[in-house]
Image 1: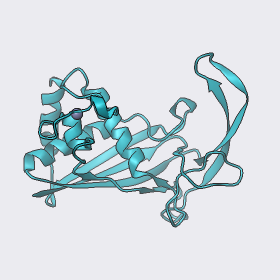
Image 2: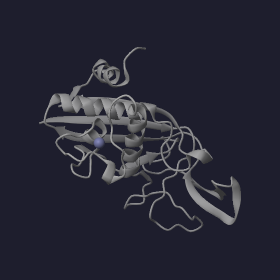
Image 3: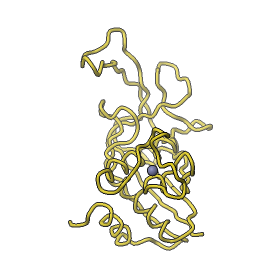
Length: 224
Ligand SMILES: [Zn+2]
């Protein structure tokens, strides 16, 4: 087995929201928090966003099944599409482990890791069909304070071969670099990313960008 470690450095340029399951005075939708109160980017949000992005990028280039409907996903665990191999399938879990990641505010010298300034924003529900505000649908969302915010995500997994580990690294990094936004409320200007940097290692050895690029060219047709 080989061990793949992917470190993602995510930087947002707008306020961010993912709905947690805690109740907060004054907010209809509170930010997700860890058991100790630290504000987090939940593992499921990051994994889901990367999978969606990977599917969008690859569709039309290589065969991928129709997630998330389990009935339309790869039926044979021995013959999975690229996205199911890396991100998992109802019949075979992903080799990659995602964790909840703590959000870090902008004033790093003053704000301890895990302490991020938040604010309550008012929103008005819009009818997508009628493109008009729905009466009586004012709600309040807790977001991080506007301005730079970041999180470091570590994604790890064990793979039977080096080639499978490289393939997973290439797909996660490709999706991460192309991710426009993370979190809820994109259409309201929330969660837009400024930059995502990635470093990968296999058994502790850095994985060169050229190795990842070879996979990207193979999937997307190459050419600059
Ligand atoms: Zn599949």
